[in-house]
Amino acid sequence: METENLQKSQGAEGASIAQEKTPETPENRPVAIRVKNLYKIYRVGESKVRALNGVDFELYKGEFVAIVGTSGSGKSTLLNMLAGLEKPTKGEIEIGKVHIEKLTERQLVTFRREKVGFIFQAYNLLNTMNAVENVALPLAFRGISKRERLKRAKRFMKLVGVGDQANHMPNQMSGGQQQRVGIARALVVNPQIIFADEPTGNLDSKTTMEVLRLMQKIVREQNQTLVMVTHDNNLASYADRRIRIVDGKIVGIEVGARPDGELTDRSEACHQEGNQGGEQDAARLPEQSDKEDITVKETRGAQ
Ligand SMILES: Nc1ncnc2c1ncn2[C@@H]1O[C@H](COP(=O)(O)OP(=O)(O)OP(=O)(O)O)[C@@H](O)[C@H]1O
Ligand SMILES: [Mg+2]
Image (cartoon, rainbow, N blue to C red; front, top):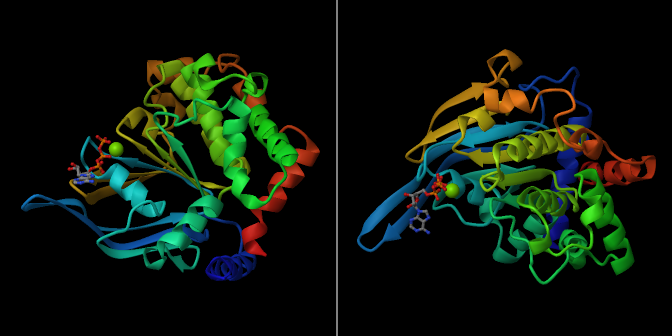
């Protein structure tokens, strides 16, 4: 019932969005996440840690945003609040028309299952399951048959370029392949928003660029919002906007991806034609039937 209300209210917003004027600019795009006056204060013994110390911003549908800051600045805390993994001490987080800070734990479980995807630095694959079973797992709670779950999982594995690794166990894959499986698992439920916490932290620089560009390309094609936490300015420069955070406060928001001319040697190497592995092919939506399926699910929230 509560879930129904959640979906209905988001649906109502989607309908009004569809009537908005074009062309879209960042300013008139629909807001995906609105954060107001957000605080997270941890108690450690007698003292208090202000992990988030009054944060306000808006993220738009379809944009790729990086949250950038040094270790301990509050990046993961912020991401965890946005994703409904932790409750704020004070403040508001609106996703669609839903105030997620007001949801019960049960409602938050539904919210996380249906609305968001996660990509973690440590991949977080289950070692007892093979790759395709890992990708299919988030679909298990949705009353979809096993056959259909595996079919969808395979389609997303193909999309991210690990179609041939379906039967591999996590320890039989490279770090880059495991992270692609992690990305497929995040995408399989077709979430409105994807949260990634240092998603390339365990990868070498070439694989980092491949994975980054893959995530960027897929969320663009499917008009999803990607929020990525990183301490790496080079990676962050590929985002549409960068939110800089110091000691739990936003110190600046930069707009615009870095022009190609300023790319460093490391990323430049990955810009060369033919030097991107199978990424380009892998990121293309594979078949018409797949595309339809993805599009139908993508617009579900706007019905
Ligand atoms: N559960 C907790 N209890 C107490 N303090 C915490 C807790 N989680 C985080 N903190 C503190 O909040 C601050 C922000 O932590 P956070 O994990 O958000 O940093 P971060 O920017 O993600 O850092 P890193 O780049 O190292 O992952 C730090 O000072 C940290 O020690
Ligand atoms: Mg962190």
